Image (cartoon, rainbow, N blue to C red; front, top):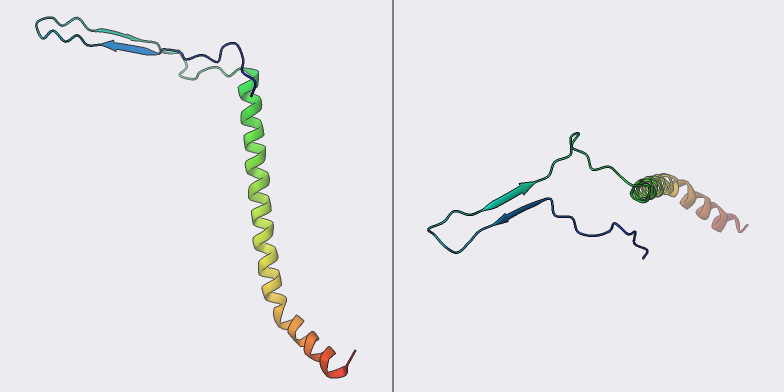
Length: 91
């Protein structure tokens, strides 16, 4: 699996607690992006697009298989009659 140079772990916040009960030396740093979204790089956008395409194709194939099962169950009476007719006539 290929990785980009910026595939590292980013620290978005940090909170340190000391064992000493006498002092309250805790440090908190938080980083926020103005619009609330992390900007996507082209690789991430491509992966999201591929994941959506795979999901859509999977849903369509599942839908078609359910429709084909319904059609075959609906036609089963006609198929049974055609088999009986062929057996009785010998053709």
